[in-house]
Image (cartoon, rainbow, N blue to C red; front, side, top):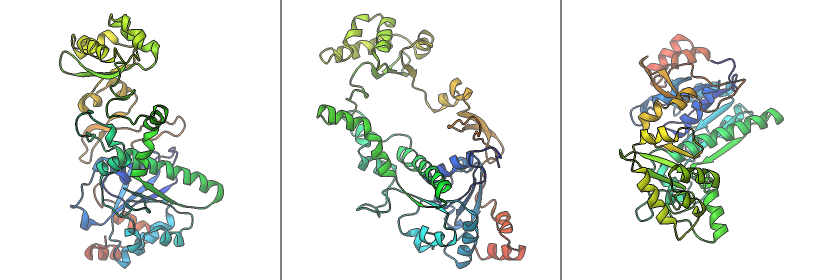
Length: 382
């Protein structure tokens, strides 16, 4: 493990699966934490094992429903700083792996639960997925065309931005507090709560104007020409985000439509200006616009597809996209470390582990004999 990572010396037990929890602990692992993922092998084939999320981690198969499984877990708890879980409310207590139980063993433990709706409230026992959380939070209604049903984003916004990243924030805050007062604490992350927190701008404009936002018809969503998307001659797309007047003026002058510069917010001319820009951008290919716009101060950019973003020169230069070995040892484009720290940088150190790959080694580390480990394996405790 990295000796220089910001979280070097911190041990994390990850009881979660799928995306929100494993993505959270991947960030912690990238920054030097020792992350041990624990999963019951009986569920190995029931849910996708998202291998890229298990880089820099260790993985143990463990049945927490058995007495011996709980004993092994508690030995790990004594050495841990953080526990992350994503069970439905109440499930961890039935496994004797909830905060109340582990706090008795390790009072300094920081325990983070990531769920769809949180541990309390009328919806706390509901099942759900990303689209449900976006819908209830009011975010989904802001995505898509105004005269069509809301569009489900192709990325898991609630899972990652709402669950994973807010969990990381909560854990780091709790670590900081523990450094000051020596006490651990419980963190309740609701993906629905977190996505509701994304409504700052729509709420601000609603309170400012008294008008509820209409999907794809707001100041920062297609209503004006200066903040929009446009199709090019080769049926690709580019973005314009020229909010500040000087950038809008630069764009109008570059496109030979300087007469529209003073009309940036003109409601009567709005549609006419949008149509004018649509016609302009259809005159040339995206590659031609790239050549013309280059580094001009216009607030523009191409709409890359996934494969194009993986080869984007800026993302490559920043090592946001890197080539890294997969589970089979083959180099493949991989998402790098997004948070760049100067003195304690995160890093990709070990390739994704296989399910249960480190079980025997960690059991041995906990003091179990070879015979005991073999017995655990035979009885499906691990």
